[in-house]
Image 1 (cartoon, rainbow, N blue to C red):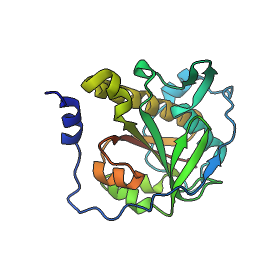
Image 2: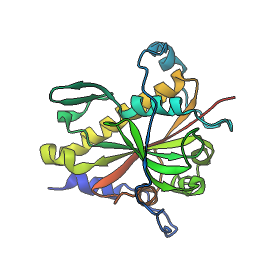
Image 3: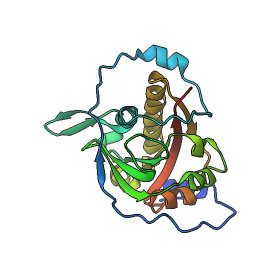
Image 4: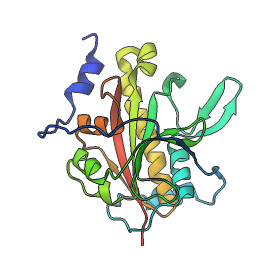
Length: 231
């Protein structure tokens, strides 16, 4: 029972019946600075809570870079800096901050079609693989077409050791909670921006890990969400 959390995480994966192909070539392709975040935009919280719905159909209009910037900041951005370090948009048990935010960009003005990793400290997107990954992400999401028709798909992973070194196997409880905090922030931000968004909990774990360029064990995929524009 010493590693029950690790065993649970691996034993509850969805495994694809089809052998996975090669992952995209993962190498740094440059970092793109995102527009500064205006935390004072008029978007009443309770109005966004009331209007939030799972939206699975999107228009062809791309997300703007400003919208993309706000979504990243809401999900996992730095909200203020203190002498002891940055404070983030979500709570984290023991301030261990295990989450990482990845983005598969399909249609975002100012961004290439790509797989990227959000860098909250710099509020920038590190592009790790360029290309059209619409079909790959649909297949990873058990054939859910919304993952290919959205402007972007956001994906949360956890670097488990960041939390495990303090909390042992209980770390998984906290990791799942934190992914929920971050995803809800993104969904509410999308609603406030009049975008459509839908959380995605069903995915082939190993295919999603290959797509994002993580090992699926020490950095494990937790959650995804599609976001797109509305007519």
